[in-house]
Image 1 (cartoon, rainbow, N blue to C red):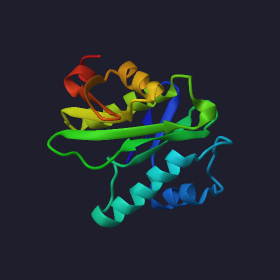
Image 2: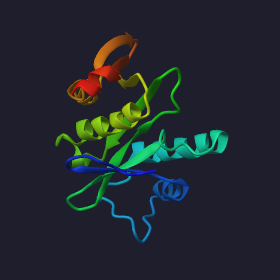
Image 3: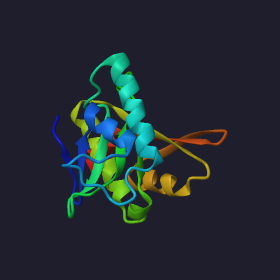
Image 4: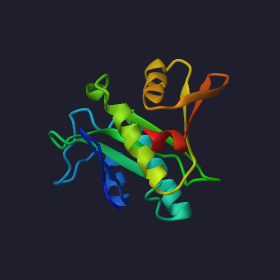
Length: 167
């Protein structure tokens, strides 16, 4: 599975060995991590990847991707699909370490991952965030998602991929 490159980022699909290093918070000799990587969200995503891989097998390209800055190669977060596509739709999630927030990296990473879904002929990408997570809501809107519903504390966003292919 190939890496996804954006202007400033490299999205690298992780494997089981890398997921285990993230969970144990022990970088391997070839890992380059920002000082605050991994954070709780990365660990949770890597644990999810391992659980789903045991149940369903290899998850790539619909797994978890490490986000690294191309400028220094440091890992700054993760972006990934929450599972395989269902009926042409796939859901994604993302997170950045505190030191990388507020610089537009999340929008860029989400847009990069949307290309994976688009290249595989999917029709829709969805994402959810909490009502209190205004930064995540802004990220999704900037990446081209539209608010399609609210259920309690959860806001659901959607991007029809014909919109992504027109940009």
